[in-house]
Image (tube, rainbow, N blue to C red; front, side, top):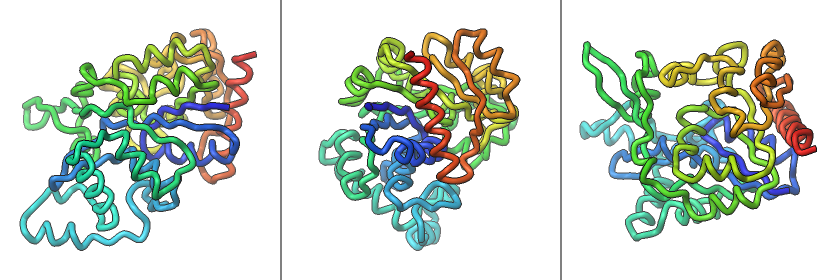
Amino acid sequence: MRIVVLAGGIGGARFLRGLLAAAPEAEITVVGNTGDDIHLFGLKVCPDLDTVMYTLGGGIHEEQGWGRADETFTVKEELAAYGVGPEWFGLGDRDFATHIVRTQMLSAGYPLSAVTEALCARWKPGVRLIPMSDDRVETHVLVETDGERRAVHFQEYWVRMRAAVPAHAVVPVGADAAKPAPGVLEAIADSDVIVFPPSNPVVSIGTILAVPGIREAVAEAGVPVVGLSPIVGDAPVRGMADKVLAAVGVESTAAAVAAHYGSGLLDGWLVDTVDAGAVAEVEAAGIRCRAVPLMMSSLEATTQMAREALALAAEVRA
């Protein structure tokens, strides 16, 4: 079985661990979000790609869900001593090494997709990880502070500001001129199942779909497209997805997120058992829907979620 997963960071990475356990013989291609990418300290940082790579490769800080395990912050402290920021973005010493290697390879002329493949050669994540595009795409958020509207990088909004102010718009800058990275469209066309994990539907999966050609490829693949709701009980399972959903006019409900993707894209949608009342509404919109436990409280629970997603895909196919 060939499975394509469109993934963001923590939620996507943790779901992928369950998918690998549920379908150990499957050929899994992960199209990773690069809209969160940012340049810091002269280095190219790819938070979502690295989170998937570290999580599946056994190097992630489990409690945080991001960054390296057994991390130290000597370099960051020394930079701060020189007055060099930003101090709000916590790159650790081990993590710095990844970004140095990536930046050196990019400067030597290698595309991001080739760099990602080279980095994964160390971590052996068990999936083929491809960035959505080799072109530069950055998600920016329009906010209002001190009576003035301005656009900030998504990382500044998410990490420094903690999404404490309303988002008025979310813009994937550069996406309209970007091209899918080599292998992305081919993997989608050759897939048997496409999965939207419980990643942020606006700034993770939404940004991937904003790259011209990817949404169309998913819609025209002719295979089951199944998603898992990141909203449980009208609130995000993790993070602040409700803030960016509001910016694009979508309510923070499992049914509203399904409608946001639409029946032209989704064939199946899993909601949590607490949202079982939304099943009829989602199905009335032309999307097959089932209510199952969606809390990734353990590897066993996550593996069962992945099994349910594949079972729904098989049901749709039949």
